[in-house]
Image (cartoon, rainbow, N blue to C red; front, side, top):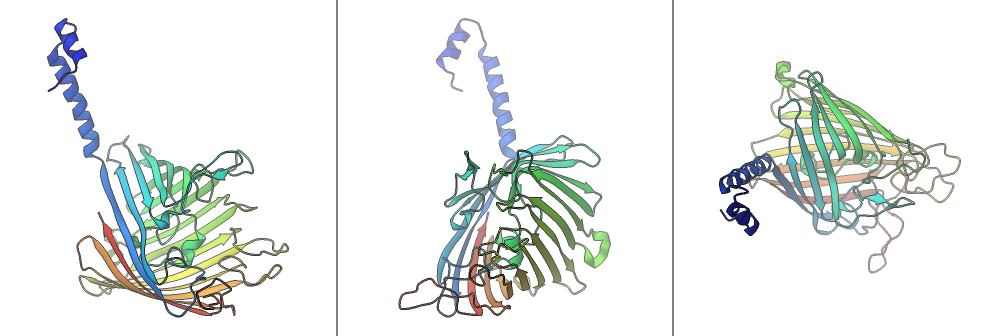
Length: 405
C-alpha cells in the first residue's frame, strides 16, 4: 500500500502508526465497496422505423413520440440509464434512484424550470426523468417514501415503451401527467392492496416548477392498487388501479386527471385482457378555445387483449377512443369554433423474441377521425409542405427494437 509523504512524516515522528492508517483505509474502502455493491445499473436503447402510408406527414394528432418527425424513416427514440440503490428489507431502509434520458424522446419531457419569472431552463436531447431519495419508516407494515422527482402514479401505459403491450402509446397517455417533483408515500396493506398519496409542486412536468398563483398552491395525488395473489387462482397476477392528480399545469384553472384501469388473467392459458379510462378536466388545449367555453375536457377509453401464442411469440391488440373539447389534439376550425375532437384507433402488435435481452416487434396502427374532420396528412405540392389536414384516416407500420441491460 502506498502512503503519502505527510503520512510517512507523521509515522516517522511517532504521531501515528502505519498499522492504524492501514486499518482505517481498509475500513473506509470496505464501506465504499459495500455501498457500491448494493448499487444497480440498468437501462435500454429504443429504436424504430415507421412508415406512414400515403402522402403528407405534417399532422398525426393523438400520437405521442411516433408521429411527425419520425415517419418514413429510421429513428433513435431514446436511450435510458438508471443508477439505483433499491430499498432493503430493513425497517429504516434508505436508497435512491437516478434515471437519465438521452435522445429525441427526452425533448420537453421534464425540463428544469427556474428564474423569475419562471421560465424553462432545460431541454434538448437530455432529460432527468427520475431523481429521488427513497426512505422507509416502520409505521405499520412500513411506509415507503420518494422525495424528489418521480413518475406519475396514474396510467395504464408507461413512458418506457417496452413495458407496454404496444409500441405506440394510447390516446389516454397524452391526457395524463408524466412526472412530479415532491413527496410520495406508499403503504402496502396486506398482500393484495397498496395505497399511495403525495404532494408535488405541479400537475405538469418540469423539475422544480412552481405554480404562479400562490406560494401555497401545490398538486395533490392519491391512488389505490389491487393485485391478485396466488390464492386467487387463475386471476393471480391480475391488477386493478384507480387514481387522481390535481394541480397546476400551465392553464388558468387547476387540471384534474382521474384514472381507472387494470388487467385480468383468464382461464385460457396465455390470454389476458385489460382496460383503461382517463378523464381530464381543465387541461391545456393546443388550439382555439372560444371565450364562452367554461372549461376544457377530454376523456379516453382503451381495451387491450394479449395472447402468448408460443414461448417466443406474443400478440397484442388495442382498441382506443378519445373525445375532447376543441384543441385537445387539433383545431377543428378557426377562432370561435367550439367543435369536439373525436378520434379512434386500432393497433395490432406482434412481439417475437429473436435475441436475448431484445424486444423485437412489428406494429400496424389505423387511426381514424370520428367527428367529421380531416386532421391527418398535409397539403402536398411538389416537395412536402405543412398545411391543414386532408384525410380522415392514417395508416402506419412500425418496427421496434429495444435492447435492455
